[in-house]
Image (cartoon, rainbow, N blue to C red; front, side):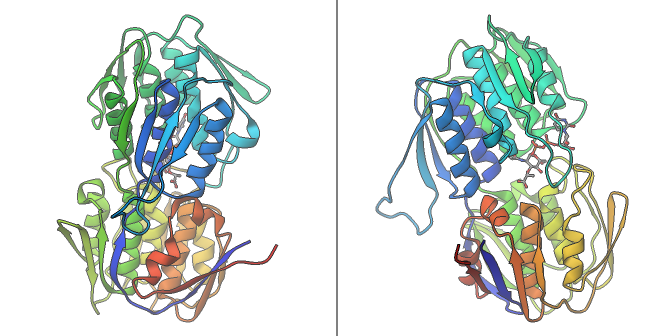
Amino acid sequence: MDRIRIVGGHKLSGVIPVSGAKNAALPLMIASLLTPEPLTLENVPRLADVRLLIRILENHGVDHAIDGKRTGDAPGAGQTIHFSAKNIVDTVAPYELVSRMRASFWVLAPLLARMGEARVSLPGGCAIGTRPVDLLLMALERLGAEIDIESGYVVARAPKGLRGGEIDFPKVTVGGTHTALMAAALAHGDTLIRNAACEPEVTDLAACLIAMGAKISGAGTPTIEVQGVASLHGARHAVLPDRIEAGTYAMAVAMTGGDVLLEGARADLLQNALDALARTGTTVTAEDAGLRIVRNGAGIAPVDVTTAPFPGFPTDLQAQFMGLMTRSEGVSRITETIFENRFMHVQELARLGARIRLDGDTAIVEGVRRLKGAPVMATDLRASVSLVIAGLAAEGDTTVHRVYHLDRGFERLEQKLVACGAQIERISDPG
Ligand code: EPZ
């Protein structure tokens, strides 16, 4: 299994290109199931999760073709992938595949909407909490689906097609909103979605669905209206830049000090986190090419944050911000309100010398003058990268184990950091 070795203490300076967003690419790829015509996605990141979802879609009969390199492409430019779900040959998503990636459960809505039936394995728990799917199923039931749970599978039927309805989410859910949008797009009649997620990835999915002929208004606000259409057609759509990747590197620069241009990053996707970063004493400037992050010799001021649905502070940056706060000149409080168990990085940060105490859903972080490198291991993607950030500023060697978590969501992580002066390398163990 691969490891990442970091020798800390190097400032970051240079340019980091921001890849396409994993959490936008996955639902967009799944939307290809809604139409027999080709859906072309540009700026798709090269990630393990994308490759796994391609395999899952193949199992339903979706063909894909990836464009080769084109003249003028920047090194590491996003991929263009053509998906064609001309013939859906299988409406079953088996446990072996769904259990490896939670988002693949989202195939349920387009399969049901287009084929009138689907059988998708329940995803099960994961390292950041129980993560139920009750609200996704509620949304489909509101649109007329009959849902049964049989042997660990959700069996959804709508033999006469889905029909429009009112979906009132009691809690903001990104996956629930993706599900409602994809199902309502092909339902008979109108759907009203209340308390919808406003995350940019939801807006990106809605934009792609609109390009495919869906009639959607209000995406990006809590109230979305969808007028169902009989069929959707092919389209071409570029995946939006990854705000979580951009925020992660911004925090890395704040941690090590330096001056980095995050090429392609957009402040409007990340405002709350950028405000928090600015309060730490980091300079954030929006430029034409992206966001410039600068921190010179000054110390890191302690800043409290509480995660919340967009436009609040993203849960997917909570671990990274905690990494940064371990070196602050004071005490900060980090409160997690989205997932009940997203503090798995605390113990591992402690191995580097961080002082963190947990009090329910709040982590109280007492900044320390120095972190010291150590072997660490993480149980999820964002937790792993928080250890990388801490390792970049720690004295000596840090080895991050279970790199496959990082490969799920960070494209060319080591190369991007090395190009800015970090000492970081991947060590592949034989066998
Ligand atoms: C998406 O997960 C993201 N995943 C997560 O990113 C992200 O942390 C999360 O949204 C919140 O922003 C992808 O986009 C692939 P939710 P999702 O439904 O849609 C509860 C990463 O690291 N809930 O918005 O699964 C749920 O337990 C990942 O890239 C129910 O109670 O999250 C949570 O407390 C991790 N019932 C809250 O809602 C349901 O049926 C928000 O979850 C569904 C959700």
